[in-house]
Length: 112
Image (cartoon, rainbow, N blue to C red; front, top):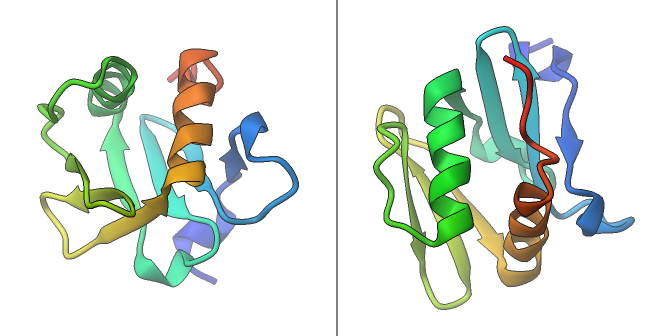
C-alpha cells in the first residue's frame, strides 16, 4: 500500500457524482494533490505555505509563484506541473472549474 493510498482524499462539492476531479488530501504540514481518474499519473506534495499561495494564485488568476508547481492553460484544460518531480497533472475545464469554485468557497482551506 502506497503512502497516498492511506491519505483521506477529498474533492470539490462542485464536482458532483463524477469521479473525474482534482483530489486533495491534507496530512500534517503537507497537502497532496492528484487526479482522481488517473492517480497513477502521480501526486504533488505542497508545504502549508505553498498550498496557501497556490489557492491565492489560482483564485485570483495570477501566475504561479508558489515554488512547488506551475499552473498553465493548454487549450483543453489546465496543466499542473511539479517543479521538483516528473509529475504533470491535466484537468479538463469542468474539473478545474469545480476546483476553482471550491477554492473560492474555502473548501480547501485546511487547518494545517
